Each structure stands twice: as C-alpha cells, then as structure tokens.
Length: 420
Ligand code: PMT
Image 1 (cartoon, rainbow, N blue to C red):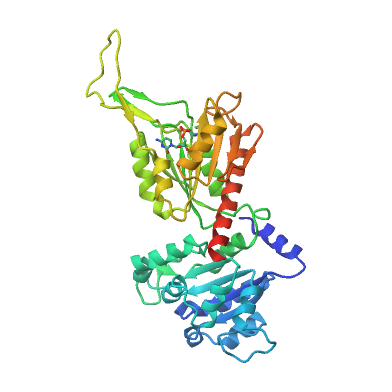
Image 2: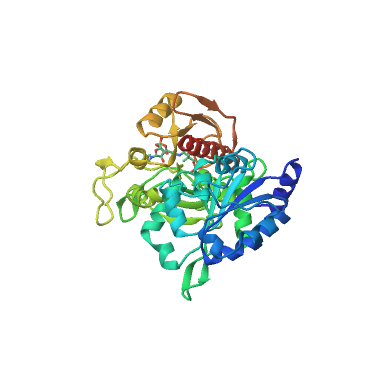
C-alpha cells in the first residue's frame, strides 16, 4: 500500500470519490466522527447513513456537520428530489464502508435483510462494501458470527479485522474497532483499481503450493522430482505484496520463504493433501504450482534396502489434491499447473476440465527456459470454454504477477456474478 499514490490517484479525478459511511449501534459509534473527519480531509465526499441504534450513541447533527452532507437514517423520509434514498445512495457510492459494524448488523447483511436504510442501501449497491466490525470478544469469536462473516466474504465483502485490547465492556480481547488509519488504509486498497494500487488481493486468503514432494522408499531414499519451488514462492511473494493473506504449503526446497507468509512445510503428497484440504474451506483462491509426485512406493521399507542386482518397486497412486479440490470447491478460484513433455495443450485442457479448474497454466517442459529449476518459464493460460493465451519466455516473478492478474479478474467476475 502506498498512500501517497492513493491520494494522487484520488486527486487526479475531477470528482471526488463518494463514500457512503454506515454507522451502526455500537459504543464505538463515537469514533465515526473522527473517521468522517479523516475521510473528508483526504478529499472524499462522505454521506453518512445511520441505523436507529447508532443515533443513540452519536447524534446525526455531529456527523452532518463534519461530513458537510445530510445524514440519512430514515428509509421513508419524504423525498427531496424524487429519488428513492437507498437506491440513490447505493448508486452514488464508490464504496460503502460500515464502521463500526455490530454483530447484529453483519448477521443481518448475511441474511439479505433490508429492513432499514443502511441494510437496504448495501443490498442495492454494486459498489464494494468494506466492513469494520466492533463488538465484545466473545461475540466476535462466536462460530455463528464467524460463519456469517466468511459467508459475506465469499460474496466479495471486505472486512477490516478488529483490534485486540480493552473493550468497552471491561474485558480484553479481539473486537475493538480497528484504528482509523487502518480502516482508511483498507478502504484505499479496495477503492483504487489494480493499476493504481497493486493491492487488489486485499482481504483475500490465497493458498499456494510449491516445490516437490518426497515419497519415501526406505529411511534414506525417496522418489521426487526437480521442482525447486521458485514458481510457487514467486506466486506467494507476489500475492502477499498485492495485499493477500498467503498460506504457502511447500515441499522441501532451498528457498527462503517470503516475509509475512504462513509457511507450512510438508514432505509427502499425503501431507500436502492433508494441509491443503484442512485449509481449503477458509480460502478464496488455491494456486497449485507444486509438482506433486503421482506415485509412491506401496510399502516403505523399515530399514535401508540392501544392494542387490535388480530391485522391483511396487508403486501406488498418491491422492490427487487438485482433483479433490475441484470436486469440493464452493466459492474458491482454482488454478492448476500442467507440466507436460508431449501434447502439452491437449493434456492441459484435459486437466482443466477433469479437475474443474478456473485456469490452468501449461508449461511445455521440452522448451528451453520452461518448467523446473530455472528462473524463467514459458507458459500458456487455458480457460474453460477453450480460450488460450500463450506467453513469451519470462522470469517466474514476472509470470507470477500475470497469473495473479488473472486471479484478480476471476475474483471480480465471480463477485459480480453473485451480485447480478
Ligand atoms: O518449482 P519450480 O522449479 O519453479 O518449477 C515450476 C513447476 C514446473 C513445478 C511448475 O511450473 C509446475 O508446472 N507445477 C506443476 C507440476 C505438476 O505436477 O504438474 P502435473 O501436470 O503433474 O499436475 C497438474 C496439477 O495437479 C498441478 O497443479 C499439480 O500441483 C496438481 N496435482 C498433481 C498430482 C497430485 N497428486 N496432486 C495434485 O494436486
């Protein structure tokens, strides 16, 4: 995030961005005054919508004075200019921010209810919606509430995680409204498109697999492949830089893991399967750059196998992780790789459809500069429906950026699909 670029981008526009600020009935509602003031100072046009409960904590007049715009809270207030209020606010918004958002209000949104102006505005808007929860720690951790929050996230709603600290109820824990700079930071990451800000994966949880797997034969030997992990690690670093929360499940590599990425080290395909499947329900995107062994010795010898003239190994299939994810995916975007040495595009297409992927990145291992170990790759993107885009040889870091551009587009398309 580069706030100076955000401000420049905002100032470059002839009309200021419109923020509809929803305030709900939390003790933290008083902080809406400072939030409104900070947004106005940054050049945003702020239109406050309050729930009835919010008006018990802070007066509409305060927020009206600070925002220099009328404050709305009545769904059926007499029309001033023949516009239905919640529709006009919904259409005018470049972003709807709800801060503070109570547990009750968030659960109401998850149910699609529109029984007062703020909920109706959010239901009607096509603008991004950013929610800053504030509540008691027990309520925030409650599995029902967590479930509703994840449900909203799966439809593209963004959240700013509350802070941990002393709460109004006297207890300590997570639930305090995030600091104003943190809320504005999140807002600016959401509101500015990828070209202005390379932070288009903010609020997204992305799971990336990397490296090879090792399938043990005896205590000192294993079956594996040449994957170095470079492609997967480049993806993890790029996704984190673009604002995503990244989980990197990696087989053994010699690489330094990128900063601020959750690294889960695995050895075998079975371990990778367990690590990925356990985390799958909580992520928005999975990119499987790992070269998972397709076979493993059916039996692992207890002690080192002795020298002999010939040795016949019996191999069995490992679990196909990506095929499992394809079968069980709900809201997630799934990106697979296909590493091929013959009939590359045909085989990759077959994987795209059999594994129910949103995108497959095909590398032809016979091409110089493609595939394992090196710093470069040469790939073709294949999409369901038959479209294909072939890319020239490029550095794996550069390619990671292009793959994430596709992921960002797929996430936006999915969100718009659910909204329309
Ligand atoms: O690590 P590097 O040295 O940088 O090399 C990068 C790479 C060549 C490993 C990478 O670009 C790549 O192509 N990764 C996938 C290699 C592979 O295993 O391809 P596949 O065609 O066998 O598998 C297809 C897809 O299914 C892959 O996304 C793979 O992760 C997944 N798979 C495969 C087998 C299995 N049991 N479970 C899986 O999930």
